[in-house]
Amino acid sequence: MDTILVSNRVAEPSRTGAVPGGLAAVLLSAVKTSGATWVGASGKFAPAEEARMPTHSKKLGAGTLTTVDFPVTDYRRFYNGMANSALWPILHYRADLLRYEPEFVASYRVINEIMANVVADRAGPDTLVWVHDYHYFMLGEFLRQRGFTGPIGFFLHTPFPTKSVLICLPEHRTVLKALSAYDLIGFQTDEDLLRFRDYAITKLSATMVGQTELQFGDRRVKLGIFPVGINVEFFAEAARENIDSNKSNRIKRGLHHGKLVIGVDRLDYSKGLPERFAAYERFLTIYPDERKRVSFLQITPPTRSAVESYRRIRAELASHAGDINARFGDVDWMVLRYINESFPPDQLAALYRISKVGCVTPLRDGMNLVAKEYIASQDPEDPGVLVLSKFAGAAKELNAALVVNPYDIGELAQALYRALYMERAERIERWSAMMKTLRGGNIVRWYEGFIDTLRESAVSPAPVASRSVA
Ligand code: F6P
Image (cartoon, rainbow, N blue to C red; front, side, top):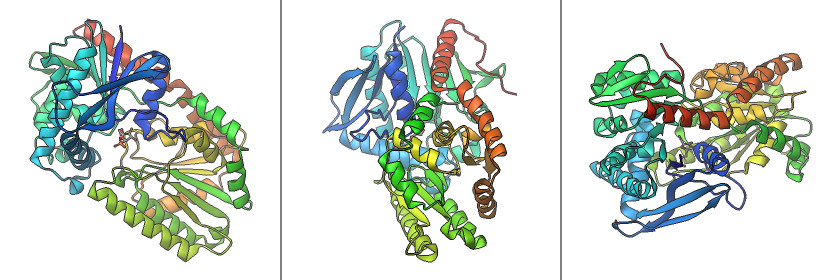
């Protein structure tokens, strides 16, 4: 059975090797090895909608990458508007940042329909289609309208919010009811699944069939939990190999035997960066002796800069970072290195390994792969400590981290101190437990687990769920 994967962003490693965002990095390695076709946006535009939009295909390892040129106005309303000004804030519990215009949802339909045409043109009777993320909630419905009867799965990489937040989105029913066209809907955590089930029952008139299936009219949809994993061995090896690169050595020399704390996040209000900076300030205030012993490296590539809320957080963080360095830095010591750039994964792996603490403190996050990459990159004999937000999906699996509430600045400041001075035996014990979890749920298992469950759901009308929830 051939497989078509669909996501908005597709990844071709850039010249530097940097891959934008978690989803694209995960799918890139899956496509290269599985031989699937991956369809997404080309980033190029056609002036207006045509019957068939231009597409471009090329090999990607054993697989194929096909990209689509979209009509410029609709794509901007779809991506900057519906996806990132309406859906993203709602999915991350930020109804206060929601901006909505009726043309957003109109263009969202247009882009989902164009993508449905592209997929329908390539799908045979035996094709399995797997759609990724909130950009394409409606794609399955449009594919069914085009007569496609094969298995279609959907995976949400973000959190699914509670219904009281979701209903702030105008047209939420139009957009989310379309999910009933899928055979399998996958979530990162059990809580996301339960919130979706509750919303579907109370707002979309779905009925429960057992614990993990929903009936929408004549359609039966299976729900499953598939926590996304990483390529653990890639990070472990890359960290080992790059630890003595010129760049790594320069950083180590610059630390003068001090300790490094690292944060790596897209520049996004969901990542809890102002709170993290405030916690670091608190730490430097409570423990003044640490001012020349610790340096914080925050790598934060800007994204979605056409959206106002992103421009605001960018300006806020730049000014906050400047204040921290002005207040606590010295001529011979940089307390905070705040960098708006992305790094290739092998360099990141080395930076993770040099860092005594990995600070991953989003206010909300579907999974957060940086948490997993940090653990996979550590030296087994002398691992660093992960400080992890309880609101990241990763906290479900990585509960041997120092799990914190990112809104509690004092708790976060104390956790940094505890992490920096944790005994080696305790660090090894915590790290070993997390590494075992990561190896058990790596990216190959995630990919194959979803595909196998989707295949089964299409064969049997009432298949067994991937994992049961109460
Ligand atoms: O699910 C969220 C996500 O797709 C991440 O995997 C990724 O980091 C991010 O969004 C990318 O967003 P964008 O494509 O808008 O830069």
